[in-house]
Amino acid sequence: MKPSITLGYYKYVSILYDRLAFLARARTRPSTPTTYVLSRRPRQRVELEQTAAAAAAAREHAKQRKERERELEESESTQVYTRTAKRGIGMIICVALLASSRNDW
Image (cartoon, rainbow, N blue to C red; front, side, top):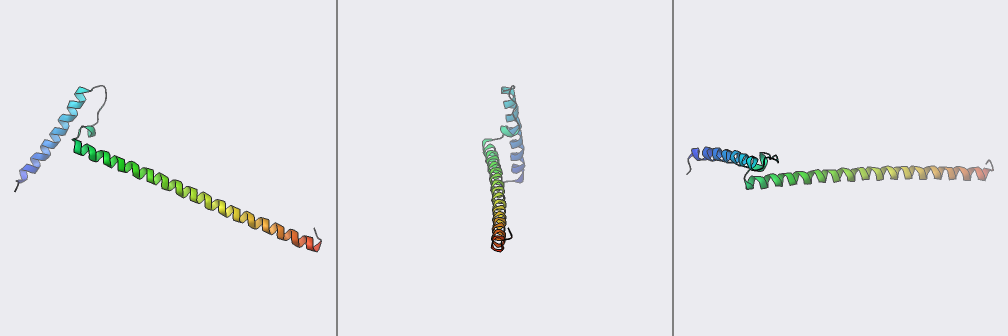
């Protein structure tokens, strides 16, 4: 059974390691700014990249869903317009037939 001080010590060493790694990277490449996030240990960096990739995939999925919804709305409005136009043409033809049958045209 591990004493509770070990967990606190591990956390302290972890933070210290991250800060030292950040300073080391900043010192070796002063021309390119490095963020604190990039100085994390490899496992944390991989988790961060996976999270970023998942967020990008979610944004892309939302973008595609909005695009599909917009296309669906456009097609529905086109169908309604076509249906209305067909009714209008049908009414004109009916009126023309009625008028021609009465010779009132």
